[in-house]
Amino acid sequence: MSGQPKPHLPLFRRILNRVVLLYLVLMLLYFLSRFIIQDRLWFVSLINTFAPAVFIPLPILLLLALIVRSRRAALYLLPILIWMALWFGPRFLPKNRGASVSNIPSLRIMTNNISHFNQSPERVPALVLTQNPDVIFLQEVQLTDMQQALSALESAYPYQTRQYDDMRTSMYSAVNITYSRFPFVISEEANPHIPEIPSIYRNIIEWKGQRIALYNIHLLSPGGAGRFTRFANNYFVRYAMGFNDTIRNSQIEALLAYLATEPYPYIAAGDFNTSDFSMTYTHLTTYMGDSFSEAGIGLGSSWPTARALGLPAFIPPFIRIDYIWHSAGLQAVNAWKGDYTGSDHLPMLADLALTP
Image 1 (cartoon, one colour):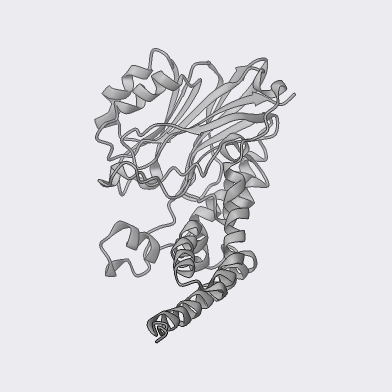
Image 2: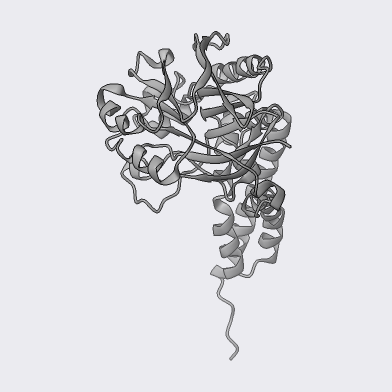
């Protein structure tokens, strides 16, 4: 007597096919929304910000399709797999840096939002000692708790400016500090006409005969502002439900307008609170060069760090919101992430060179 096929397997296959088809339709809708609506509606902008999350079901569904031998489900998943490969794959390819670039002098830059609740700020000078940057941009420096730990930087970086973060005084008191090995030939507070940022420091150094402007930037977070936040206590749920990037986008437009008036090549580094998967990031790249995108390998995700959240250290950050941008006249030779500094942000580093 021949064995009969188990009835539950075809049933599960049919259910899987329908689930996968629904996933494909939703991904198609997201694809169209991403390029048509872009970041103009908050919920599309939120999905764009955390875009890697939309691919989380893919490996699970693909594995199930292989287990139940559903060719239809695998076929439905193929375009999503191709999209993911085309989007993420190039980020892991080595950047083609010729000998003419790798052998020229470079200026090492480091940026890190060290977080106002950092319980181990001594990790920051320890990282600086190993990485030896020429210019350091720090954000969210809580002087009352961190000044002693950061004093170790003062002898190696005698030139510095401190910009009070007026935008966040209702939440905490902190400053953005720029450290430099090189003297500031010009150091002035400028009014960039950025919403909620009354002034920023414009620091000019001279390196290899070229003046370079330095800007330490910390833009407003788009998460957790207002909408539905009273219904949730978890920070990330509140971040998503209260997502509103209107002010941050206005800050970006004002910053770009201001930087367009800068006569010297410039570096604008810091916490931009903007995911590199968002369409707003794509807009930024039309005006400035992203050092990690040009010379780094991998996703470069910098936020949030698992250890700062009390999670296992092997869990990587999810998105990159920290940047070392540069103008024409400069080029990225190398870029990488630094080690954990006690913050919910990882530091970003880059070697920049003058464009021949």
